[in-house]
Amino acid sequence: MEADSDAQMMLQVAAGDRRAFALLFDRYHVSVARFALRFVGDRERAEELTQDIFVKLYRNAKSYKPSAKFKTFLFRVATNHCLNEVRRGEYRVEHTSTEAHEDEAGLEVAGGEGDRPDQALAGRELERAVGEALKAMSERERAAFTMCRFEGMAYRDIAEALEASEAAVKSLIHRATLAVARKVEELQTGSVPARSRA
Image (cartoon, rainbow, N blue to C red; front, side, top):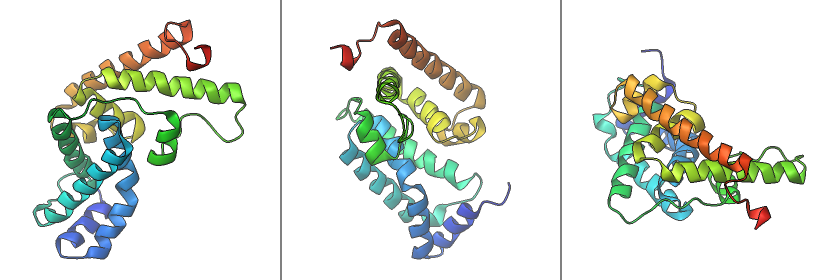
């Protein structure tokens, strides 16, 4: 496995280095919060889940073995934690507004500051279509799609995080991508009522 400075840092955490843990937290907490938000649809709960995930990471640091990239390991922990949360049945994913995603989860989908109002509206409607598609996906499809499209993770790493085969991950992402494409097509053909038209 290639050198992974984050994995080395996690080994330092295992040896009791709190500063190394703080650096890992600073580096990844936004990504993990964004990931959790896709599952619970509630910013405050997503932040609580993120804290839980990092506490679990810290408590189990001594059992960490750098057999995969640190980010892969982290997202395996995050996926298991979020899936357990959703399976408890308290949460049904409700798509939150684009503004909430941008402000609170670091997600940028509506373009740059210089966008014309019609471009900004198009960006918000696209995000809404993607959100609707995500809401309808299975948890594993949502996890795989989020890691691939929002976190830029490779199929191999997603497969390790989900403890699945690479072929299974490709299938999950393919189905999820088709679902998103259908929602975007519905939006473009007018099948999805836009807020601006209401």
